[in-house]
Length: 119
Image (spheres, rainbow, N blue to C red):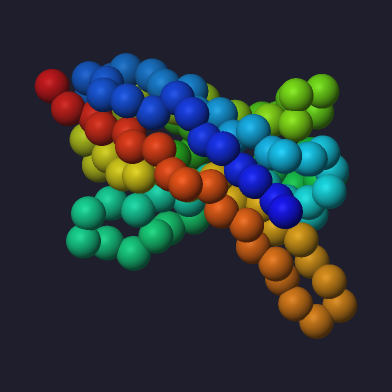
Protein backbone atom coordinates (compact mmCIF):
# COMPACT_ATOMS: atom_id res chain seq x y z
CA UNK A 1 0.00 0.00 0.00
CA UNK A 2 1.55 3.28 -1.13
CA UNK A 3 1.33 6.14 1.31
CA UNK A 4 2.30 9.74 0.65
CA UNK A 5 2.39 12.14 3.58
CA UNK A 6 2.74 15.87 2.99
CA UNK A 7 3.97 18.45 5.44
CA UNK A 8 5.13 22.06 5.49
CA UNK A 9 2.05 24.04 4.59
CA UNK A 10 0.96 27.15 6.42
CA UNK A 11 0.29 30.87 6.27
CA UNK A 12 2.88 33.14 4.69
CA UNK A 13 2.94 36.74 3.55
CA UNK A 14 3.26 37.66 -0.12
CA UNK A 15 6.88 37.43 -1.18
CA UNK A 16 7.60 34.82 1.44
CA UNK A 17 8.76 31.22 1.16
CA UNK A 18 7.63 27.76 2.19
CA UNK A 19 8.99 24.29 1.65
CA UNK A 20 6.62 21.37 1.29
CA UNK A 21 7.73 17.80 1.83
CA UNK A 22 6.19 14.53 0.66
CA UNK A 23 7.37 11.37 2.35
CA UNK A 24 6.70 8.14 0.47
CA UNK A 25 6.21 4.77 2.15
CA UNK A 26 8.78 3.19 -0.16
CA UNK A 27 11.64 4.17 -2.39
CA UNK A 28 10.99 7.15 -4.65
CA UNK A 29 12.53 5.07 -7.43
CA UNK A 30 9.47 2.82 -7.30
CA UNK A 31 7.68 5.57 -9.18
CA UNK A 32 8.14 6.82 -12.71
CA UNK A 33 7.51 10.34 -11.49
CA UNK A 34 6.56 12.28 -8.39
CA UNK A 35 5.21 15.75 -8.20
CA UNK A 36 2.85 18.35 -6.85
CA UNK A 37 -0.62 19.49 -7.78
CA UNK A 38 -2.74 22.20 -6.20
CA UNK A 39 -6.40 23.04 -5.92
CA UNK A 40 -7.70 26.50 -5.10
CA UNK A 41 -11.25 27.05 -3.83
CA UNK A 42 -13.76 26.73 -6.66
CA UNK A 43 -11.12 25.59 -9.15
CA UNK A 44 -9.97 22.32 -10.59
CA UNK A 45 -6.85 20.60 -9.38
CA UNK A 46 -3.89 21.67 -11.47
CA UNK A 47 -0.41 20.31 -12.00
CA UNK A 48 2.43 22.37 -10.51
CA UNK A 49 5.69 20.49 -10.95
CA UNK A 50 7.17 17.03 -11.17
CA UNK A 51 10.45 15.18 -11.06
CA UNK A 52 11.00 12.09 -13.16
CA UNK A 53 12.86 8.99 -12.09
CA UNK A 54 15.75 10.25 -14.25
CA UNK A 55 15.88 13.47 -12.26
CA UNK A 56 14.45 15.67 -14.98
CA UNK A 57 12.16 18.35 -13.57
CA UNK A 58 9.19 20.10 -15.11
CA UNK A 59 7.24 23.16 -14.01
CA UNK A 60 3.97 24.84 -14.78
CA UNK A 61 4.63 28.24 -16.36
CA UNK A 62 3.29 30.35 -13.49
CA UNK A 63 5.74 28.83 -10.99
CA UNK A 64 8.87 28.66 -13.15
CA UNK A 65 11.71 30.54 -11.53
CA UNK A 66 9.92 30.60 -8.16
CA UNK A 67 9.40 26.93 -7.27
CA UNK A 68 12.06 24.23 -7.18
CA UNK A 69 11.25 20.53 -6.91
CA UNK A 70 13.85 18.14 -5.56
CA UNK A 71 14.15 14.77 -3.84
CA UNK A 72 16.18 13.10 -1.17
CA UNK A 73 16.54 9.46 -2.13
CA UNK A 74 17.85 8.49 1.29
CA UNK A 75 14.70 9.81 2.95
CA UNK A 76 12.25 8.74 0.21
CA UNK A 77 11.05 12.33 0.19
CA UNK A 78 10.23 14.86 -2.49
CA UNK A 79 10.27 18.58 -1.76
CA UNK A 80 9.05 21.75 -3.39
CA UNK A 81 10.72 24.97 -2.35
CA UNK A 82 8.32 27.83 -3.01
CA UNK A 83 9.77 31.35 -3.12
CA UNK A 84 8.28 34.74 -3.99
CA UNK A 85 4.85 33.43 -3.09
CA UNK A 86 1.80 35.26 -4.39
CA UNK A 87 -1.80 35.29 -3.15
CA UNK A 88 -2.76 33.31 -6.24
CA UNK A 89 -0.55 30.46 -5.00
CA UNK A 90 -3.07 29.90 -2.20
CA UNK A 91 -4.40 26.36 -2.50
CA UNK A 92 -4.34 22.89 -1.05
CA UNK A 93 -1.17 21.25 -2.35
CA UNK A 94 -1.23 17.53 -3.08
CA UNK A 95 1.69 15.19 -3.55
CA UNK A 96 1.36 12.82 -6.49
CA UNK A 97 3.26 9.68 -7.47
CA UNK A 98 2.82 7.85 -10.75
CA UNK A 99 3.60 4.34 -11.89
CA UNK A 100 3.39 3.47 -15.58
CA UNK A 101 2.52 0.02 -16.86
CA UNK A 102 1.90 -1.20 -20.37
CA UNK A 103 -1.70 -0.09 -20.53
CA UNK A 104 -2.30 2.16 -17.57
CA UNK A 105 -1.03 4.85 -15.25
CA UNK A 106 -1.49 4.35 -11.53
CA UNK A 107 -1.72 7.57 -9.56
CA UNK A 108 -1.25 7.87 -5.83
CA UNK A 109 -2.14 10.95 -3.79
CA UNK A 110 -1.34 12.43 -0.44
CA UNK A 111 -3.94 13.97 1.83
CA UNK A 112 -3.04 17.56 0.94
CA UNK A 113 -1.57 20.46 2.84
CA UNK A 114 -2.95 24.00 2.92
CA UNK A 115 -0.84 26.90 1.70
CA UNK A 116 -2.25 30.37 2.31
CA UNK A 117 -0.49 33.47 1.00
CA UNK A 118 -1.96 36.56 2.59
CA UNK A 119 -0.96 39.74 4.35
